[in-house]
Image 1 (spheres, helix red, strand yellow):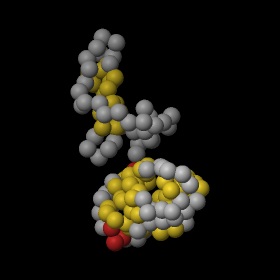
Image 2 (spheres, rainbow, N blue to C red):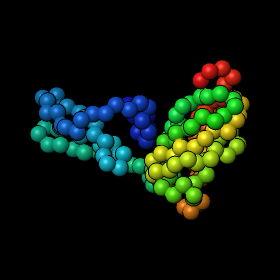
Image 3 (cartoon, rainbow, N blue to C red):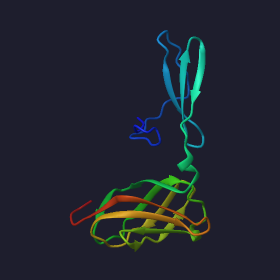
Image 4 (spheres, helix red, strand yellow):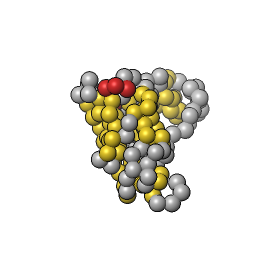
Length: 148
C-alpha cells in the first residue's frame, strides 16, 4: 500500500510480476529492479504503465531500521535500510541519538552498525562523506530498559 502522495510504501507485499486481464480493468503493482513501483492498468485491451515521480530517490535516503528498539546499554547490531548509501563503509557514518554507531558493513541499500548506549527515542542519521549527502529518519529507534 502506498502513501497518499505515492512516494513511499506504508507496507510491502511482494506481488509476482504478471498482468491480470479482467473485464473490469484489473490492476497490478510490480516492483522494478531499482525498487520503483509500476502500476499496470488493463484499459480496453491495452496496458498502461504508471511510474511515480521518484526525484527524492536520486539522493541518499534512510527508509527504515531493524530492530526498532533495544536496551539502553547499546551493543545491538542495527540494520538500516534505504537507497543510495554507496558501498564504501569508510565513507559512511551513522549517528543514533547524537552518538556514533560504528559501521560494520555497507551496501547500497543496507548498512549495519553497532548501537551506542542511549535513552528514549533516537533519530538515525546516515552520512556519505564522499557524496556529501545525508538523511535522517526521525525517532526511528527507541532505547528501553527492559528486554527488547
